[in-house]
Length: 295
Image (cartoon, rainbow, N blue to C red):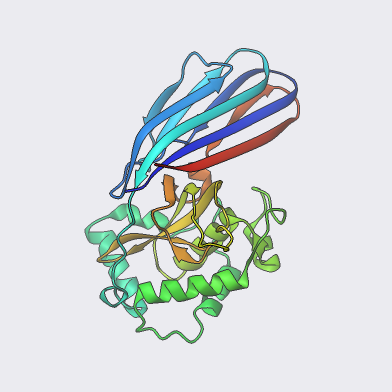
């Protein structure tokens, strides 16, 4: 199983002194079936007196701290070592057809896991726009209802990648999904939110996944988009199989190099660093991520 070393640094710089800060972070990689966080260290400067941690509603490790020391700069650095194997992918022919999905999902919700319901509806950053439903129909054009859901997901994911262009300058965190739909440009967060809206409107429970991506391209080939950076993709619940992760930015199912940090309904639930400041005036935010394979 490959192991990875991840360093993630977030720095806030204010143009005046902030008297206090309240922050909650999702930076510790999850322990899952094919992934284990071997070590984790969180460093905050200036050092807070009350750094604590907990598991949030979605099972993600969350660290919380308050800072009462006047400061103009706040830096949060996490260092992780993660071991991750290649996820299991079911044979497409063993997954249900798209025609059977609505009834099977409803059965799963009522008989085994009611929490799936929250992944079927709109969430704070994923409105169920009619335009997204139209996009879902466009991506699925020509695919019959009897197609296995894994085959269907691979095809529409490929078509999604052809229809949208990765552009770091096109959007910000606050950019609405409607704008991404019109301009067909954005970053991994935009593509994850948009694909979630498409799939939820077709009756599939879909979650948002935040994490990191490291790739080793073939000789002479470029690295995949999102390499050595915070990354985002989606996780689709398939009845009879479970959750399957798909990366719409790179048109592929998540592999051993997709390191999972947190899962939720959308970015709002799993923001790496989120909080409030008292004072400080305007601030700038800088982030940096380094992902390296450990020999």
